[in-house]
Image (cartoon, rainbow over all chains, first blue to last red; front, side, top):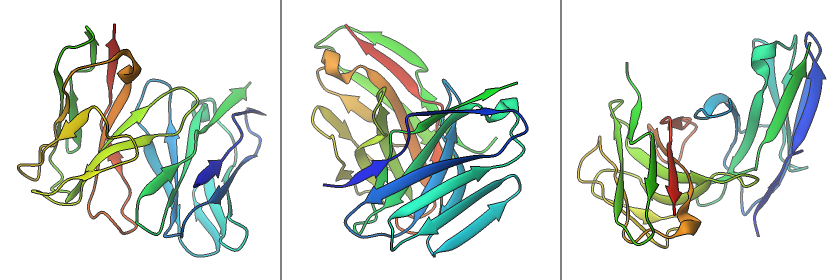
Length: 109
Length: 114
């Protein structure tokens, strides 16, 4: 079966750095997405990786290793507004998105 | 403001009743999707449409139907609601179904079936 694994919850301190990991086992690979979802709101797009390496976008970076079936989202200079769930999703060989259950990130002052 | 509009925002529905969740986008996206989101689970695809006039079944299609008569609208119908269909339903769209274009989500419909 297809599977996306993420930690259920993480806690970090305002101003610090946090890394959210995502491992996947899917039938094929056609890209990996990270989304942010605040409580009670819709998911919003953060990043996309299809080749190995690091994609940087402001305070957020996303890394991919296709050989290891592994990605991480790195959040720097954490702000209280970064408290949210972070969803990892992989597009499989049929171009369908397989979603992880999400990581709830709690930021403490 | 361009985006996806879902209606209603929330609904309490008696089991056995029929219900249509509405979804409209104004971005001229070809692909549209319906997901349900339940606590502790990832988003699960119910039905999708790669272009107007075509639809396909996702991971959890039973009890749901969709239509795509035009580019903008993608309604989801529950023919006879059951309590296990209590969930938050998200409609989403993307420019194309199989490239790097991200999904844009509506604000969701919170449905409770009693």
